[in-house]
Image 1: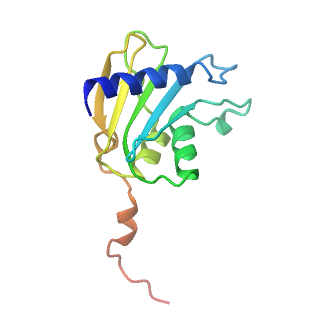
Image 2 (image 1 turned 45 degrees about the horizontal axis):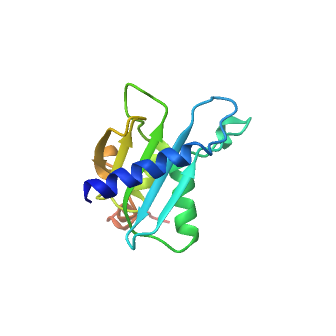
Length: 142
């Protein structure tokens, strides 16, 4: 992905964070997901008073894309208001990302537009992926 495309995706993730519903934590997060065909879906975190029901920006963007028929992705950019370090996906989001492959890019940014790039597989090494279910297992006796 060229720098101009990365910068645009990061900008879209920062725009998405402005729509975050985070009245409890005040921690805004936005994501911009680039599908293989060039379509971009954005997402923001949506909190709930029952914190366990909160959905992260990354999963919001992925659910929107999947619900529209997309299954292959090039990259996702993530944004927050953290000044000194780039935002990183939580564990649940890392697992959600590798569901769709271990070799696509994650751009974790700061408000100034700087970022750290890793692949989904690098973010979740030794990940549990769909192919794991196809691995040989010991047989179970009745």
